Every structure is written in structure tokens, then in C-alpha cells.
Length: 376
Image 1 (cartoon, helix red, strand yellow):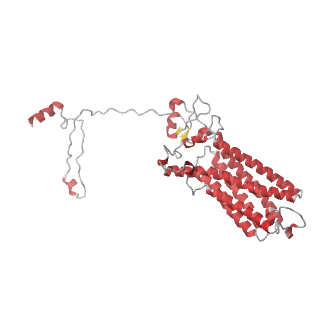
Image 2 (cartoon, rainbow, N blue to C red; image 1 turned 120 degrees about the vertical axis):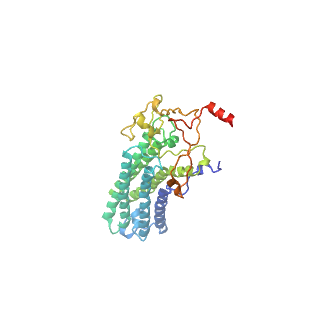
Image 3 (cartoon, rainbow, N blue to C red; image 1 turned 30 degrees about the vertical axis):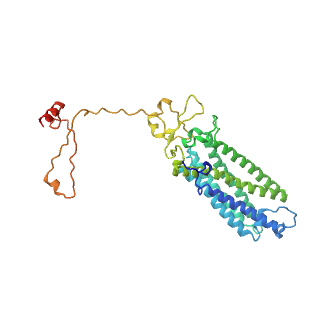
């Protein structure tokens, strides 16, 4: 057994780093913009008019000579944000993460990716069409970004809820995520509630941001804008946690000697088995046994088959009796024509055969064998 600590048993460079890279770029951009504005002495830019606003909007700083930084970091974050959702979809389809347990989940994931692409293009256009020269387009793109990112998160979080609401459909590799007897006592549901809390707070912050901007309370509105921008980064942390089990699985498969037992059955379709004595219990079994027990192959949210306990394991096949037990056989050399041996590349090995027809030239009784030995 290796001395590697348990908390370090995962692939260090793996897909969970994709959202973390986006997080570093996004928060780094915000910190850089705020630091630059502070170093400049908290100026009020000429295109802002006469105001004592403090702090200024992110877009105001991004409309200055720092616009190239604003555009590049936003575009970089766009790639890794969409890449995170796309990678989660691919890993679940390839069964490197917990596969989807419903036919609806892949469609929810695709809708989430499409909304994320549109929303991220919106924030990219926010950085390109600055508030100084394209104020109307700039504000419109802010609305596009908020609207479509909300729906991207909504459908992604809905998939987390489905995982948590149907723990009996998870593969055996994920039994450890269940920590209680209640249906929702699993880590997928805990993840969903944290994401739901994040979404509720984000909606509240966005609502106050728009309300205060509409009523010309720019300082308060700017505070909400900076707050929701940093709050947005926590979403990437949640998605990094979602992708992290793939790194753990990668390490376990390549270092089986460090674990007492590990069987990767992600690529083996499973069917659900329910224990009638325990309302919340479950025991997945390989789907290859489902044909004999009447279980359909498409176990999804629409159909959740229940298999009686007596049909969980197929009956073993009966071993046929050997009809040649006790029969003494001897090698018999087959007779081949001359043409068979003309081919120099062909070799001949006399087979051992047992004939049951008449005449039984190759079969001898025990008495005949004893007589033959005495004669010798």
C-alpha cells in the first residue's frame, strides 16, 4: 500500500481546473480594475458627467485605457465558462462522471450550454461596446448576459436536483454520496441546495442593481454590481467540485494497489432493484440481467422498474453430465492422402478423438487392458 495521503489521491492536472482557470481570470480582472482605479486616486471620468459616485461602475473603468484588459479577460473567461459546461456533458456521456439517470438530463445540459454561449457573448459585447461610445448597446448586452446566464444556471442546477432526487439510480461507485435514509440525504442534493442558494442571492443582487440604477442611485447600484461580479465567481467553484470526482476516478483506476477494492462499473448499464423491506434502499444490478426479469433497458425518470428480490440474480446454468466418463481413449491417427503432405508449409498433429459408433476399435474394457498388460 502506498503512503500517499487519502486527500491527495486524485489527478492533479484534470478537468476540474477548467472552471478554476476561469475563476482566476475573472477575479483577477476585477481586482486589477479596482486596483487601477484606486491607484489613480478614485477619479470621476469625463464621460460620467458631474457626479460624486463612489465606487464607479466596472464598465466605466473598462471604458478607459484598460479596455484591452477588459476585453481579453472577458473573452478568456467566456471560453473556459462554456468549456466547463461542455466538458461536464462530455464526461457524463462518456461515463467518466456519474452518467445521466434521465433522458431529460442530456437535453437540459444542451439547453444550458446554448444559454451559456449566448450569455457569455453578451458580456463579451459589453466589454467591446463600451459605455462611453455605445451606451445603449452596452446596457442591452448587460441585460442579455444576466438573462441567459440565469437560464444556463437554472437548467444546470435542475440536473443536480434530478441526481439528488433519484439516488436509487446512481451507479454503485457513488454509494458513498448517500449519508442517510432519507431520499434527499445525499451529496447531490446538498450540492443542489447550495447552488439554489447561490442563484437566489444572485437574482436578488441583480434586481437591486437594476432598481438602484433606474432611480439614479449610481453609488449603491455600483456596489451591487461589484458584489454580484465577485459572487458570480462562486458558481465556477461549484462547477469545479462537480468535475472533481473525475480526477479521483482517474487516480483510482491507475493506482488500484492503493485501495482494498475498486471496480469501475460506470460503463456497465444498470437497472434498479428495490428492497420492499426498506423504503429508501436500493441495489443496482447489471442491466444484462434485466431481460429475464422484465426490466426495460431505458431506465429513466419516466419508468423506474421494480424487480422482486427473487429475480435479482440469474439461476446458474446446469452442468451436463459427461457421457464419456470411464471410457478409455487412445490417440487415433487420421489417414490423409498423399496430397496432404505435399505442402511443405503444412504440419500435421494427430488429434485425440473419441468415437462412439461401431465398430469400437479404439475402445477397450478394463479386462482387455489387463490381459494386454499380462501378455506383454
